[in-house]
Length: 344
Ligand SMILES: C[S@@+](CC[C@H](N)C(=O)[O-])C[C@H]1O[C@@H](n2cnc3c(N)ncnc32)[C@H](O)[C@@H]1O
Image: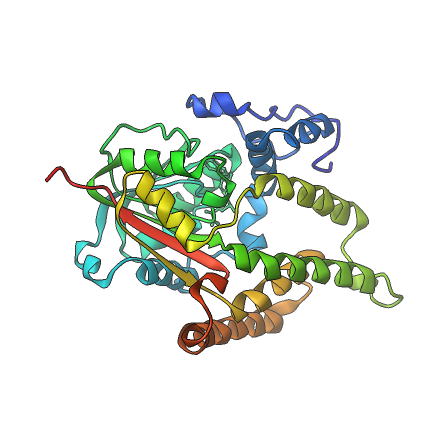
């Protein structure tokens, strides 16, 4: 059954966004009906739930997410690049919250890296919360999970020492409202860290490169003798339909200055931004698209090693060489941190 099959075969319907916001715990819906997908074109939060429930169980594989040294180091590097060095003596934070946790990549790996002791993983997609909690349990971490809308976080004021998110702010309709919610649930002096947000400039080169790669691979693999490199047409059609929803769920790109302004308006202090990945993103996006366009596992271990090492090398060049001449706002990823003011 494809994601748009009109037979839902008893799968639970996608929860309306209002139920999710009210704290109900709807079941994952990995097989949306054609009617639901059509409705989602005009309802960004329904689109978030359908799209992310659909990809939840395969998300780690799709994005090469792991919970070993590779991704633990990557998550910790993002934290270290964003948070001032003097903050390191506060680690570990006691209680941390993740918004838009997906499968748990950021918080679970930060917990493994010694950044936080206890974690609450939340997401609008029930499927993602289920996977993130399961991943946390498998790692033996102290984690609980909840379906939650970042625009109305279902926790009391002054609850958390740290709030984190990765690649989530650009999906939220009212980012400033969400940051106000973040400041509300933080304890005074508590910190937030959001990483992996697309910049205005980065989107101008990453998306066209991905689109070009998709077209090239799906056309070249039609040639005789290359059929073993072509995914079945039903899967390619499903990916195209998912891509249509992707256009509905990706709401914003940011300049570092925009994000800083929103965080200050939301009541945060000590606001700072950093950016990463310039040439690394120009390589990374086409490679990820290539991986999605061919049958799983087809590219093999040698390719995976080449892709990872090339990305590491280009990231180093971006950080140490290009950063001297290329404006910060041209990089692909922007990160932001800030603090909830204390009373005095
Ligand atoms: C691109 S994924 C990133 C997942 C994960 N943080 C990662 O980096 O792998 C964005 C996630 O944000 C979630 N999301 C989108 N809008 C949201 C909202 N308003 N509140 C909470 N989560 C949201 C989606 O369901 C999805 O799991």
